[in-house]
Image 1 (cartoon, rainbow, N blue to C red):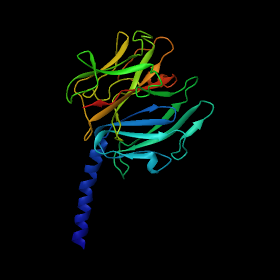
Image 2 (tube, helix red, strand yellow):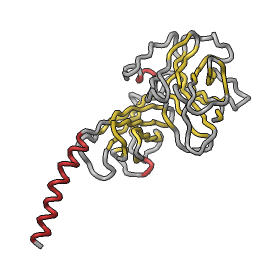
Image 3 (cartoon, rainbow, N blue to C red):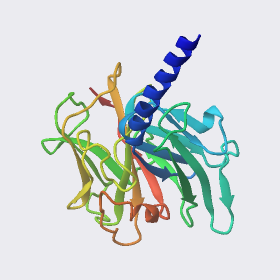
Length: 277
């Protein structure tokens, strides 16, 4: 028994420094995007993430998500639900909740962080959704995929394309009064949504899609190599377009300075048709 106790003690002395050293390098970049009913919390890490993102006030499955070995995890919370401890301040018209990011699914280790998430309720703005598949409603904006500057509805894996959003039906109308922000991609019939850009239209991963930039009367982002989803032949791309009061402020990527101001503007979501791969 004496010999066995000594072996176990040595194992702990060896393992503890290794665990501490591994987790001390953990870094998480937390950003979020607010809609009328949902806040989406995006966590980007400097290493494959298999930890937990959850609200501090609840351990319910609806209030947490576990990473699955990639560098991005997304937690979506219902702003109108009391289940996850989201608080609403009537005076400031804001929803708030504290979200914890744990690099380990069970342990609390060095590098874990807590972030106070806030969403300001839009004033004098209504959020609505429009799709090209709804023939009874004319979209305010059109999303197109371009190949060699020509629109296409069939794309090839690994080929370069341009994602373009323009005013519709008159491309020259309101040339500088709209702003493209968050874009996502989802396989048709699937339930996994991939974030392509942040709330101000800046790329999350430039190898997948670049920053949005103004080109005359349109906004465009380059796709250097068309991506795809496993076991899916059709892909739907959606982007949030913001109507500005007058000329929009200039986009500054790698900065969160303009993100909060976008929450106070009227937003609309424009979706692509299903692109075949």
